[in-house]
Length: 345
Image 1 (cartoon, rainbow, N blue to C red):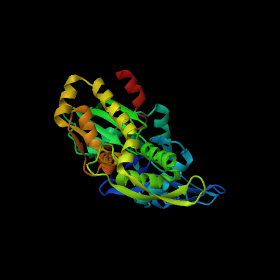
Image 2: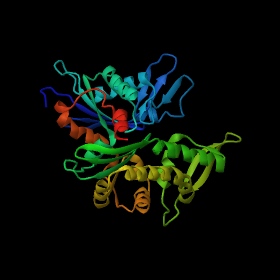
Image 3: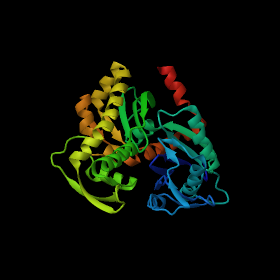
Image 4: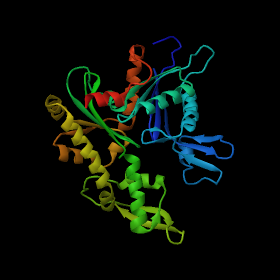
């Protein structure tokens, strides 16, 4: 590690941004939300403070996610958000160089999207930018030993994307990415509550429902929670009692789509790697993997044991932190995930 080094590992997620600083651990853990004044273009809040403003802002203020489905959808806002996060994560001083940054990207990213991530980080204050695939970072953060030719499978369910990969010898043997993830589940819940109960709820409320009573496998006990929203007919406040059994019916379809993607990756993998995975099990990471019953559903459909990683939400950031030790041996710039995937097909 260099003298005055200020290297950072960045989990640039649709829902949250986590930044790992060499020698310090995770120093930034904030929602990837920006509140901006439309008239002046000035950033008013970022992170948790901006997330609390979602659906509560006056006409001239908009709270937004600058990333969508794991990639940058608003370049300018992403740059401004990262500038603030980098400043709070790094050391600042006269002799402190700009940080070198390792950023994880989804397995389904295109070369153009890779370049967009690199440019955004450079504009936000990075000296050099290195990319690694999200499931590889998640596996390293979950503590899997990838040095030997032994197959491991990671299912990383984030906010915008679910990344599935078979890993061996510090590389990705097979991977897939789907946009069915945590935010898609929140949207499905909000649509259901409006259609079935005639109540409009915000995205924060939908996320709370998913966390509190959401499940993708039948529970032994039907639990409930009181939800407050706006009556779709007359606009007045309305309370309703939601049960986990009805949320299970809502989330069955997105959960099934994730399982189908996992089965597809297994089908494309070599018999030797599949045999290794049957022995080692499937590791679940990402915030979305914590939804009740995801491990049980995957085990039932694949016949393979599933383990939820310790602190699944931080696995990708921890993995980025581990790769900081190899940064001097990495090549900066695009890693051409899409091209490599096409060559393997």
